[in-house]
Length: 548
Image (cartoon, rainbow, N blue to C red; front, side, top):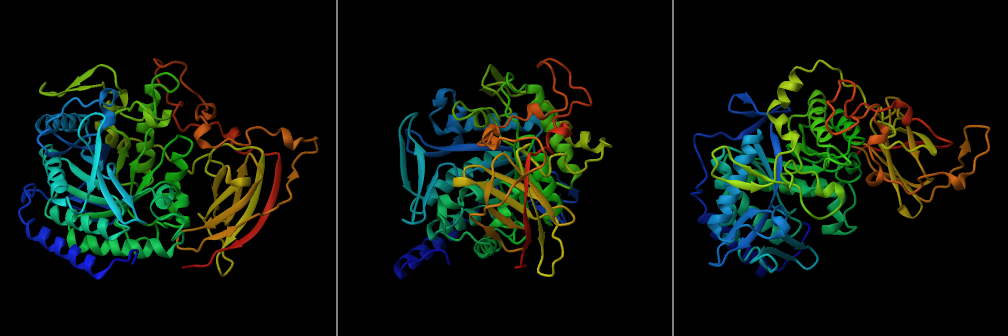
């Protein structure tokens, strides 16, 4: 197990679970006329029909109103200047209902709710707290397990509102890495076990980025994720047998530890952003992970200046068609509305901006902000895919995702019998672990890792294979031209993807925000000459990966 606790604590926790279970038999959102979403092969099914989740990500905030009632409502960052529009339970829930109506009117059928937003977990200190607002500036905290009934009642009211709009829900949870979280998770699963509104539970968001937040450098191997997800799967099958179990992966290099091919989940979520990254990351997941796959999060941030709304609209359409062509079974957009803090990528991914006002079709609800043009594509996405006769080949930049062009490191990856491994992941890092770069092996097991500075550390793995790390490597890079080269003057040594714009790589770009997009100006139509340039090369040799 991941945690140690004394006998008294065990007894108390068990009693709390028994008390909760005994009081949760009559969940108000259960509806015998609705059916649970199931999986048939790699396709979602609702009753006897195929169900394609069109997902909008929505973040929430807990508020305790003046009467002491806890309510789960819209994210505080969706509010103007982070000041709540409403303060009472009734008015917050009415605002939430308006948001759900608007999301429904856009054409989405599923909402992924970031329920982990206000929970604070300290595994080392075994603390699990809920942060809630009492007004715009004052935040308080209390123990989650001790107040689980209050929290679950607030979530229950939230689910009832989502249910009223005939949505399905994916709940993103805090990963149960300690007993307190495990206990609360059991409470939550039990409360909604009979509710078809809940499609799935996402137990861990982007382990590549957040493993260390919860566990530090502990358990950075492939065995631990399999062990712990088996525990979570057992919890799901016991307490929520009708709902699906998933984890959201950030990048293909999750395979180094949280191997999506080994972890026993019902379906895989991919979170992929940026036009240079999206095609090749989706290609890898869909071609080398044999599980049902959805796009859990994607977006192109756009403020209609440096990136036009038209480009965001086009990204939605083209990313949907590409992903569906490669077998993805659902599609999710990040996020509901723009926010007013953070970097460009964080602030402008929303499908609603912060200008003007929008009303629901029945005129009963108003919200701050207006639709970006991508909204008007949501209802058409599947028909656009069905009518698209284009073939989607391996992306141009699959072996040099970000267009690095100073150094090339070659190599080959084989299995224990010296057979080439296709689809292996190679991650290189420069000195001081400053900049990373990724690539994959081809059908011959060979790889070409492009970089703007010399990589010194390498990680190599593949689905179902062990991780190999090569540290402090000193390779001899030789020039590929007879012309004199000054390595010290090589440009962009510190450049990594957050600083790389997709726009210079486009074969064509719209000239202004009002120009119509022509058929040859797709957001993924890159200039192939930009991705295969290098000045120096070296060979890392043959790397052998053992099976697990």
